[in-house]
Length: 309
Image (cartoon, rainbow, N blue to C red):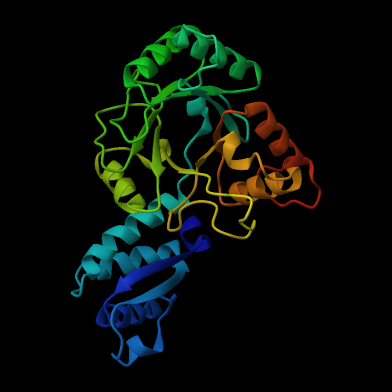
């Protein structure tokens, strides 16, 4: 029944007008719909953007046909198949040591160095213990020094009693052990791992990163599409909070600096929008505060977010 009940709306950018016409005809034949600019229908436009609408069953039949079509539609078929599979899959939060509606990861910043502290590794470990006391379910050790990040993370793997990930931005992914989470960014190859994989998506290359991970053997049940929160005091809550074009949203990185200037109500509104998009894992350097905001969202009788019980 799920194949007939799940309705997906996918925007496709940069199609040749011939491809847009074929796409519309084929989806209409399956019972779905494609919104196409009128110029493309008259073959008077260059590359165009389209909106494809249909059930999962209709997309499945559409993909089978598009694989045999010209005008770059065979490539589109692969991307649509990937996106539809990810859109209906639901990775398990139990990877992060909790069965709750939301998993919260404490962000251990090794670059945070208070004045007068000389043992920076010990300071980072102490910070990790503080984050665990502030209702963190797992830990993410980050920083600019690869060696230090790995040393601190390895210490925590043996003592923290929870899942631990290590992440150096714009660097090769760090695998601490088979069951431990791994964070991957575009342009860096992932070696074999049996644990959850957080695909850190940016504005460019998100689809390519996800496609590479899935083709490399990372199953949808352990792939967490992850984004960094993009919000400033001048932004509206209705604006883009995360990169556009993700097939789904599973995890979000929320730093204190990203929301420090926002009012409490705006913070709650931002988190509500992320939860509505499907986010169920939050990585933050303020886990207690984020947890309290998520509790407030859950208890709000006017809120229809999926974390409500």
